[in-house]
Length: 168
Image (tube, rainbow, N blue to C red):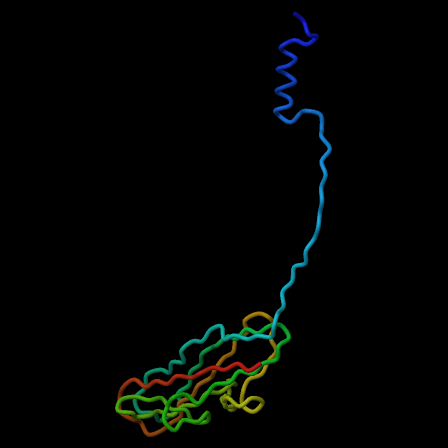
């Protein structure tokens, strides 16, 4: 019996249909869109700080100098001020900070914003802070420290903790 097609033709047409080679069907599509957005607010963060370590000394008969760095990151075009507080030493001020050691003994020191150690770095905005404008990237700052000649207290380790405040 012959139907005008051979078994081979049905097999070829069936295989082509399975593989997607059949005659194309018309497909409908629809599209749309959506908005993507973010709001950037003025912001600053203290990215990093490092210890300020003075060299070991005996009697403090001359200035002992050291420096460290801190980094601040603020959004681009954001003006800001970096302040350093007086620390934790009893009776400390920004002009005369105090490291505390054995039996509450104190060693005076000062922090400066310039390498000549003439500009005290304090915490009063627009008076003794460091001001800048954010770039969107971390910006490094050097803190210059000095232990001036003074009556030398008992031997031991003397420490203080300084808080960095960014006002923007």
